[in-house]
Length: 329
Length: 247
Image (cartoon, rainbow over all chains, first blue to last red; front, top):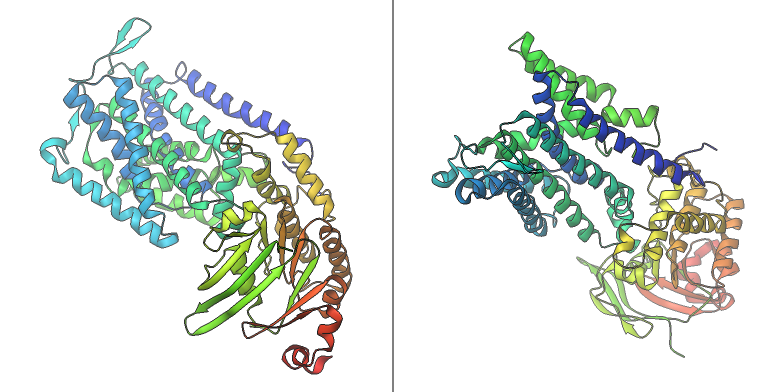
């Protein structure tokens, strides 16, 4: 008999390893700021914010098995709730961020009450439609939202008070550490969720919903919970993006920003806690490097994705888990 | 005496087909009740109505004297009515531990916080206990789909037992099993029925005669006979409807 992660006595050791690994990654991302050259410094800050988006996406898609093509609506909900409150009401960064997360959670809950009555392809279509509706709404009210052109926050956003010193948001170190804080929290929340009894039920819903219902679980409630957590994390990413990179624009509500988190998650490994972070980083640098060589860089990106589907259908971390580290969550 | 579980005029219509036609059934606490009948007699539909997989078209279901006809399936499972699928539907890609843990944590989790964190050691002990009870001790780390078919059926039973059922519905548990496996499974069911009321749908007459104290015969959605196994075997109507030329 093979000795797996669930063999008698092992789960405690496994939990220890999992916690250690996640804390090590959080620490490594923090320490990287002292080593990275300026160019990569900004890149990594951006990757961390976008990876938060993918981590949120993965809670719904990777663990619960619900594929969404509308996550831009949660990202945009966070971005606009934060951005508009800063721009019009000069709300300071921390409460604005909290507003953004709250907006994402509320949008996800309301959306879920309607959309979770469908499943599979119908769910996919409904997510797409709602996200497009929100996108068009942003464009329609362009007197308030400035539509496609968007707006910047640099004028309205008060500097952040860090231990008595006012640090402006143009400061690169604030961008990096702000992004680090957001991605670390998202990573730890998603890992804790995956390890909890709730995480076990979410995976069960993904594998066989009817069976799970007959084991005594109200699967609708669990799916709604996953959607709200997923939406809130995606919104945190959008809110952080607005604050740290000082720009809010309708592009972030477009279909492209619903496809990105799906691609990042698939590339990194759906249903693994670290996959979204890895996938976002790899894709970001893949585009960054290849666009330096050729203007047809999307060919290279497309080719890489094809290779991925052919040889690593589980994504990078999924393959690592299947082949080497079976204890990975 | 009051029955643990009763149905009153229970019916289910699928379009033009009356799959279950005014079935009234009383299931006392304890022992094994078998439901037999030809294919399409409505046995699986009947127990699906009882477990809540489908809503009833008409009639009532009473559990411990309470009307549960409109209760959602997960509430019924929590109340103790547990259905074990005819087609094995274990979580194929999860380990046996995870399969049973899903059922067991439902009972171990106390309150809202129990959903966020529970005592892994207690969960492990409970899962090991249930796996041992069905004869799958030590299989926890194996993926469910790596088990031989007969063991998957046992895993399915283990998942049901971990829910601490009061009524355990077994839908053709011996289907597709070899003779030796059938004997082993029958023995488990007999042990289980010491504590749990078992509602058994079964085609294998030897198993039915061996395990059941009362047999209900269904044909075309209706109950056509009910009685001790020996009487049922002799009943002419049953012979025509079900046992046919085989016996």
